[in-house]
Length: 426
Length: 125
Image 1 (cartoon, rainbow over the protein chains, first blue to last red):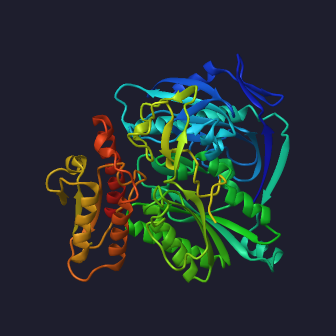
Image 2: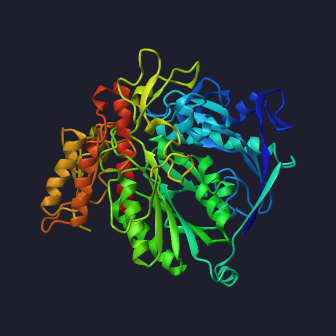
């Protein structure tokens, strides 16, 4: 499977009378986008705002971050099974509006999550302080249930990203990258001396604000399966989760998964990147057993030499992580696991809620309990009403001078377990 | 399948599952629900759902619901490890949910219920 990614570098976003991309500037017709959002009758109103790197702006509570893309050649379309038809994606040519993101924000439940600071110390802890962000805050109709509101905001974000992505269809990309992996037999013949390596990606799948969708299917209801690694670049996996935002994968991370990116960079040189295996993180223990059994079984069936396993979340997924690691190692396949830590505010507590001797190669995304002071920003997009209630925040969160004392948990992407940010430990 | 019981301190679970459901409603803290589950595990019950379900951490939500078997007998090693680690994890998080506004409290009940609902869907298929 071969996919060509054409990156169109976006250097600025401006509101304008007509939506278009010209000379690296994304012009956005706010009224036209509003119509796209309000197609859903459960959304009463939407407001759009632009947040740029370096500005004194805080976005909260963030629900998802999405990179606009458009399929210009090859089968299917972006966000298959959700926006586009369910055709298999990951081949042909895709254009990307690089350097910007659609950020959906708004209060769905009262203890919600997710802060993006565009400047100050907090900006160092979120990758999305570096993107030009088109932020949309959706207001639900009176009496809308949380499940329906979550779904409405999730889908509205994908609709808006799709409309914006479409603007890049006829634009000549500034940079083109080619990603290609081959079938099993072909790979063995082509790279006989290279270790066969796959990426096992664990997907959060537990309930409201804790879900992930694969080709439109709720990951809770899936069995572990195999993808061409390029499929995720076309939006095959999207986020429906945002609670404890530090170690959740927004859709943007799925589209730009750094483990996939790095494995491609080594493909054909130091390793043979065989495939991506996806597996869920359900609440029910028999589901955990089944999913990790299947993951290990596939690793053996594919005759892999090694895998990189990335987790999503903390606590209950620690059990899935350790089950995956232990069972895959028992098949004779080496593992490196990527996790983050909840080691307490002083960093002295046990980091994970589960462990095993087989987990002897571990990369951490940092300690999510670490405390940080976020100074007051001139502008808040969304609301601070609930900031005392989010994970990692506490009653003393909002200080007299308007600054916030929080744990890294609240910052979108701070301890991301695909390594999407630079926090770690040695 | 073995007979099961749901330990919960979430009134919404009681309301949703209705009378006659195998629910033991406990008026206690999140941690005490875990400890009640541990007591049953010591008597031979097995955990069927993960005690740290959800990303709303101990201390951030007052509610917890856990599905266990009713069985008595030998202690299940995996269940014991999971429940003990879950109780240990409680100490790492700041307690603040006792000061939530009523609307936030209702949201916490809802999230706990949706986590349990997913597990029940798996249990009943």
